[in-house]
Amino acid sequence: MSIRRSIRVSRVCVRVRPTILVAALACGAVVSGCAVGPDYARPSVAMPATFKEAAPGWKVAEPADRHDRGDWWRVFDDDTLDRLEAKVDVSNQTIAGYEAAYRQSHALVDEARAAYFPTISVSAGGTRSGTARSSLASSGAVTSSGVSNTFSLEGDATWELDVWGKVRREVASEKAGQQAAAADIANARLSAQATLAQDYFQLRALDATQKLLDDTVAAYQKSLELTQNRYAQGVAARSDVLQAQTQLQSAQSSAVNNGIARAQYEHAIAVLVGEPASTFSIPVMPLAAEPPAIPAQLPTALLERRPDIAAAERRAAAANEQIGVAIAAYFPSISLSATGGYQSSLLGSLVSAPSRFWTLGPQLAETVFDAGLRGAQTDAARAAYDQQVANYRQAVLAAFQDVEDNLVSLRVLEQQIVIQRAAVDSAREALAIVTNQYKAGTSTYLDVITSQTAAYQAEQTLANISGQRMVSAVGLVKSLGGGWNTSRMDDPEAKAADGSAAPAPGDTPTDAPDAAASSS
Image (tube, rainbow, N blue to C red; front, side):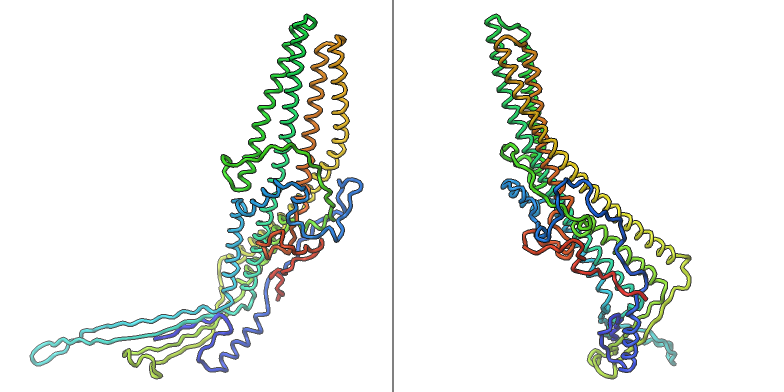
């Protein structure tokens, strides 16, 4: 029986001559400090000093503003929105898919780390064999048979020295991939939360529009009744009645169409909270909220606050480590192997000193010809790294654009809503004057219709701008990263309300990437 041990880790003990084992382990300890391939450094990106579109009076966030804002939607002070957002983490299936991907990446890290340790196998077996032997005798040929038994108990252990840092590079790559997967969870969560909030405020804006339409229908109904009475008295033309009916029916049609749009937003929210659209509903409540104050951070803070940027940066780190893995293939692999065990023809004497055997020896293997395979693999790894660097820089540029777009939207809409409110007041006053003139017979009904249409359009525009402001406010919070920071990449399950303090902009991740292995 033989116990084969292929020892690829320095802590495996076998019964061999101590001097041989100590010398081998000492050699492994000396050379294992070398790791070939480039060390990773975060790719450089062009960073603006400030945001161009920030409105006058906007300030950079003070240190006190950098507290954990995980439940960022609470700044909108809406209980219904709070209840809906709480369901996203629990039931959103997109987030569930990213969480599964994170668990897979965590398993890949453990898989890579397994190469640090020995691969040990044990086997036991027994065979019974027989042979036929012929001999000549005076009486003729004689055939006899011989039967023998063989019993074995063997074990193997192998350990490949991580001389060139291949295993360390693999572990660092998978660790960076795990951190990227954690950032992907945060990005999916933030995206779902922001989409939910934006859909919610769009729905509330439609509720406000619906109230406006209902009020408009009621006003048009009164106008029709007034016109019909004046027609009955002979002071209004039949055309005035028809125009009033047309205007009323158009408003009624718009009210129905508005209900379709609201239902679609309600269905979209149902999907985001993981509920069937058929059983989900949100009570009607017109939008009355104002966007909260959202302090602008320095542009450099996006590198730590945006999970999509963090994920892209970690994938660049993972790709960098794969270059070292590819370069390590150029160097010979050094391994120690040991075999030991017992082998005997008698089961009773199997585990005994005379039946014992063992072997120990190092092995050096080097590929002398591969038709350019290793060169191609190294070139592919470098190209993959360059691709991830480009993706990272593109993510940073897109983040700056995202912030600037929402900043300019909020700034312009804030100016526009002031003007539009004045326009609504003017339209209402004009409508009141024209209506009185029509009742007095000094104005035509066409003037009334024109004023009513202008007043309705002004109020509808005001409702739309109010909804757009809330959507842009949510977009700005999302573009600034919500309440997330890079310290959460190693704790993707941490909830925003756990009270942990977020680092100041520019802080590095709390878990330094394993990629920073020293080069040879």
